[in-house]
Length: 186
Length: 426
Image 1: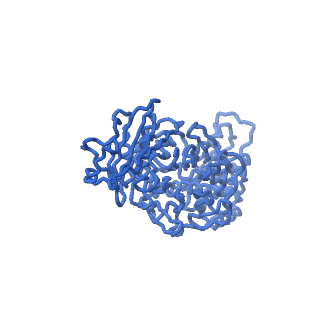
Image 2: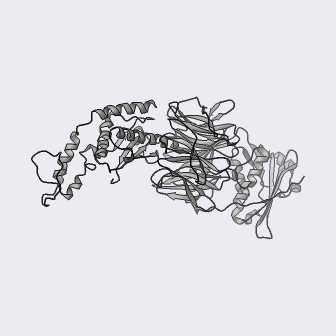
Image 3: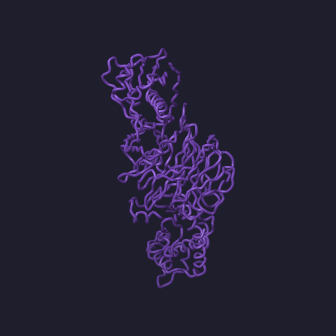
């Protein structure tokens, strides 16, 4: 319970100071333009209003290849939140990531995501399943506090059943104590 | 006194396909004292597709409680009580001699008779006749071993029972059912997604388990007779940790439909609305019914770390029952109701432990580093659990006094999530 309260209060702080777009988002817009095909005729649709700078080529259909969710330079392409042993506290270093996805959901109300909770292999499979669920819920809760709607986020746990790293060492365990934010297009 | 009892052997046919992985059991620890017993090959058993006495002998030896005495070189080879030369058996150090014979019955089945003779008292202490078809010969041998075990130890035998477990091969998961000696493994479910937590119905005809085939944990109940199955808990969120009520009509399951992982009662046929049993803001999971059906044990981290609690099935306050250590999980009652087994973490090691309800005394039974999922044999004597050796999942068993140790090795794959069946076809 204490852990929940801590996660919630920090999330609330984050919510208070997250009104300006991040540099990562601007970076995404730049990437969008460079991804456009020069030869394509200008479509009727307007370029993103955020874009700045001298480049004036409008976006084309091909600009979908610059999907911010897939753009490696955009924080939205990062989907994994890592946890300490037996913990479901979202660590400081992952708050920008969670906040970026929350804002993306806020701006795209039709978008839905699944948060998948995972644990390392040690201990009870059933307790780990519950622990994974709680990690997924912790991420969901933070995203809600930052503007996402509850119906946009589904949580699921794989417990220790789907390890990303298969070793039995601290590095593998740390890799597997994780919640992933998964979009339907993934 | 001649006791002859007719038993109709009705091993049920599994709706399943033969599994490729076979389990072999090796004994890694034995009982403090072993009863010396001679098993004389039965008359005319050489002609059988499956000889009986080697199976009986292997069962008894595997239990760790018996030492087999060489039955060779007797003249005549005894098959009837009057042929037993007690003086010679006493000289060989046998406490008991098992004799028997096989004949073809009129209906085409085998007529199998056997007797257990007490060497000191020079009397018959058990005698039975079984009628068995060819595919029931192994089961018959296990039942014979059960009789010998019970007559000589005073506890019921569990050789004629079965086990279930999950085999992972590459990215494939299979739910297997095998005889308690690892023989005759059958795959009853095969999936590309994980399968966990299989649990036997009290009558041994159904398995409840958790499958991730719908991309999230859902509880199913599958008939071993027909192979038919049904999702019985597929609510919003996670559905897991099925436990049967002793009457076989209800399941306790862990659901997250209302938020956090809590324990609910559902009907085993999937009808009706789940009835919430636990009320906490923490994780409550891994319910297990007491043999009388009155209470459950479960794992909860309401006090911080995971510990084992007990509460009435009718509802009411939960009482913490484990106090040693910071991580106690996966409770399972002994069928006699006197104790429970669970997993305790000590340092970085996870061991099988047993705690007596009356004395609250805890005994660590294994020193494994990653032991999991303990379950009692129906006679409360052995505990089957999952372990790891050389990076591979294996099954192992330990007696509730920690003395007898067995290891089940599979010829392929990663084996985990075992559960011992109840006694069926009594």
